[in-house]
Figure 1 (cartoon, rainbow, N blue to C red):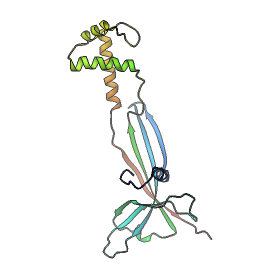
Figure 2 (figure 1 turned 45 degrees about the vertical axis):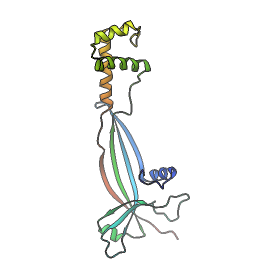
Figure 3 (figure 1 turned 90 degrees about the vertical axis):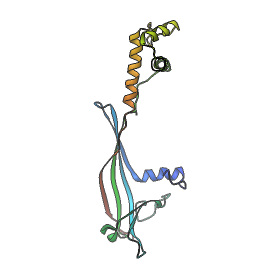
Figure 4 (figure 1 turned 120 degrees about the vertical axis):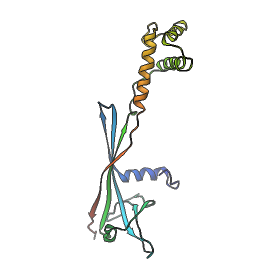
Length: 200
């Protein structure tokens, strides 16, 4: 979609509605990640090339066939096609059959949810991080600076070096946790073949 500038935003939405059957979301409490499974059901047509020198078939996304064209139905999108090797499926395709590619993609995400962090907590973390990582101060020196500049802990207590270390450690652990990345997993690939009954 990003590569095709001719498609309007509405057309892109219609295409997504056409090819996405459903999306399920689960939360893994052990790994603390969300698992999204996107179920695709992509209508396709398979057509052999007419050129004798053409050794490939074209598989394109197209709206599902019906006895009558639905109102406001989008047209076949030729850009969304891939070139494949000839197959018996392509040679046997006919006007009375429809094909859909079924596939599910599993996506794992660690950053769909993050604990609330107030602007004041973010400010404290920024100060502590800058003093510790850039200026090389230890947490006792940082807590002394915060006390001298009338800062208090988020719970209204006087700063100690333990408070500074805790804020620094917990936030960095949180950043590391919510920055985890996972490769998508493609699974359950199959092809549906539907025999259509012609309308009189």
